[in-house]
Image 1 (cartoon, one colour):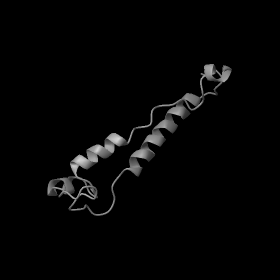
Image 2: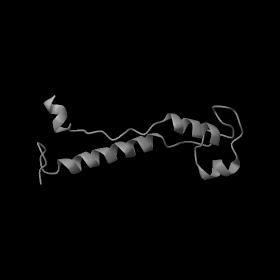
Image 3: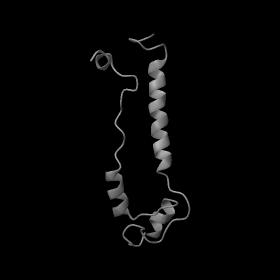
Image 4: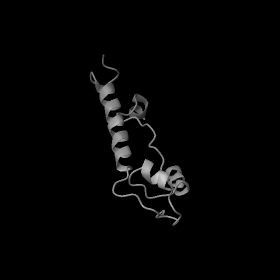
Length: 88
């Protein structure tokens, strides 16, 4: 069923595109390579349990927490524009 000016299946295409963007963002944030023994930001020792649990870890828990606070997840946005925005 078409909604407004969109074609059939456009809503699902929008959902698929949002999911693909989220997966792409998550993959870009994955660690790779060998884990470091000391944090690359502050120099604190990274516990062996953390290095074993998270392959490729580069930051201590504190620095990782600070980094994740700075990285905001993109808010959902309307890819096709609303009818109201097209009327203005």
